[in-house]
Length: 285
Image (cartoon, rainbow, N blue to C red; front, side, top):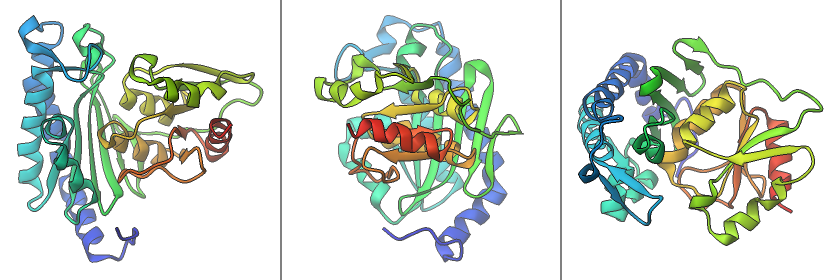
């Protein structure tokens, strides 16, 4: 993996691509949601919902078909790129290795918050990020049921429906509001690792859609997240969004989170660097 360098020819080519085609990526995301997700929202039949690893790990026809739609559209926009999608990796785990490869990679979660989607709750979104050599370059977070689109390009800021996002800092003296890995999806060891957040000065709660929690941090509506898993499709888009809004992310050992994996978990993404250090410090206990 090479470091990010704005003068590197590969990164220059991707920045040029983004300057010309960001709107095309946005259109692809919106079209996938309009064609495959929203027609099934609050209209799912039992035959359209399956379990993966257990009763809380759901997948629907909307997940599969939206990912297929995006895989075709994004691959056509950027020849030579590869797509790492949640459902493709579930079918063939070796697909995940492309995140550590040399080609530009689209990281896709077609329906982040599938449980909410299945239950008719509008707290779900579609996540797309573009990366190369482990460096996040751009992201799109689309909450179709709310008609909200958040975007970020490295070095160019974060935006929600065209308005600049600035995460700011928590109000001094107020309990930190932290969204944590949902207990339905965590092991006993992971619950123990997150337990230090249940302390004075912190108000933890279970997370919903990871993508929407990251958006809440970028908007300054949530102080931090604390997550115990590292699947890139859940985190890539949101990590860049938070960074470009002025926030920071750290593992509990004090290192930035890496989409290529092998992170020390849990990790946090927060409104500002001081809050990230505070939450990471608690997680070290």
